[in-house]
Image (cartoon, rainbow, N blue to C red; front, side, top):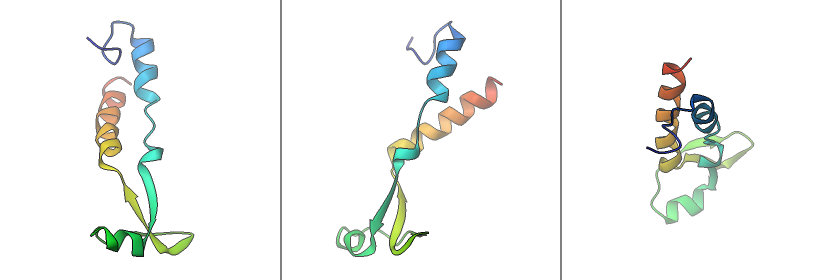
Length: 73
């Protein structure tokens, strides 16, 4: 058992709802990304010299969070 799977569904729900994936998004300069062999990404809306990248670890948390929320509405 972990705090994400407790009998106290109020506490468990709070933990799941508070997973924040916003910090998983990064706007990287194209030059910097090319130097590190990253693929070209979707354009950053406020600066077309940057691409928007989503860090995989945070994205991996997003799916279980959505599943939890969907099943516990």
